[in-house]
Length: 265
Ligand code: PEP
Image (tube, rainbow, N blue to C red; front, side, top):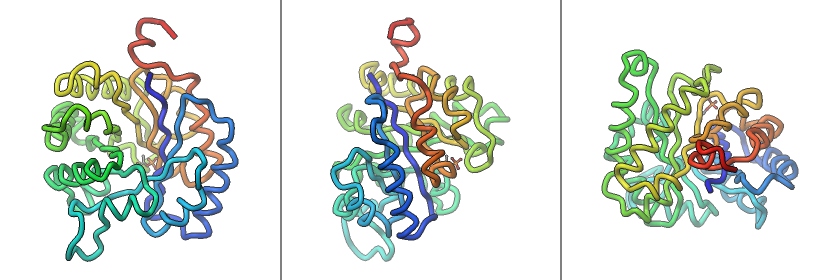
């Protein structure tokens, strides 16, 4: 059974005192969270050490927003997978649309980053998603197919099992415009079919696919209620403990898509 993964991407927000205040509130508010959900915060690089220490052995995951593909070297500003592990991370985002659009991360670069993350035993959350224009032109599946194959082709099935996918329609990120539950379900189903074709039904049934794009406590239950939506990647609403925890508590009990479709619990 797939567990919900609720991930808060803090982006380029919060200095140390603010980050500590937020993580303390999340830690306090997440005591007793149902066992079918896992929570994760993704602060900026400079906060990672501090937040890792604050979390200690408690049940809150820690991830980074990006990494460099090389292990070390003359790459000013680069942060390697080993550095992220050393800072206490278990997770890392790869291919967020803000990396693709503002920093020019290509499929080739993202493939290298994803492999560097896997080699260092980090768990990558690989983000895909179309721009509004592509959706309006009916090219969403074509684009997602390309983003999937450009980066994920050629992994061993055991490596793919450690990847989480995040469907983040770019038109929904930070815009207040959320994908309808029907759009989310249809697109997640398509992504799962790509995993099944490339890596088999077994891997596809286990792969978690998160939805991201203006998720809030008010729309989270419907989105998380879709059989192929296995969690949320949250930007704006993850910067306040109340809304992040509100999303984390939404959605009822998660059962895997196959179980939901056959009506079994
Ligand atoms: C994101 O940046 O991954 C995101 C989904 O942002 P927001 O929730 O603010 O739309």
